Length: 259
Image: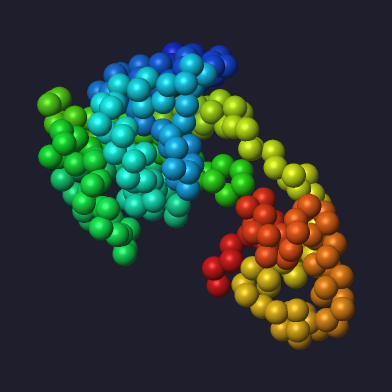
């Protein structure tokens, strides 16, 4: 295990932060302390834009990333082919990565833009630590720290072992601050309360079943199925059942649809 440093003062500072820019500086301090000095943040792997702070600057600028890296991410939509994003979608556990092995992390079926991926040894990146963060409305993001090849090589797994709890704590605290300023974090329908039968019907809709098929599956009449779906649509303030199923899934009503 690597030599641990005390991150508790940084965690306390982060707990007291109310502004994103102040919290971003604490993330940089944490990175310096563990010798993985370049923080990163993706607040939503499904969004093309990187997070902004109140003065209009992008978060990566505050973190010290080169402008060419930032341009690559946004201009080439690298969030859609990110091996980090692919890993974060299926796990809540922090993990380490090495730039020289980044090709092994590529999502299956990654498209031709993968050749533009910028976290590579050729671009001066050594590796890093990623903390997945799962948020309301089905969003998946991450907080991470990276090191460059020009710095002294570091045992990233040892750093993660030594600071796993504090890094996860820091990631959640930072994302809480960032999430609070999102303009869309409380959509219409978010406070809906669905009945067990409405959830059941929406779950089958999300799995591609028709009204008639659902009626057979749960042993109810087709008009009864439509009654429950209509009620769910009204509660969620949606215009059709497909939209209702999608929103219900984002809100966590439907659970896993993988069967």
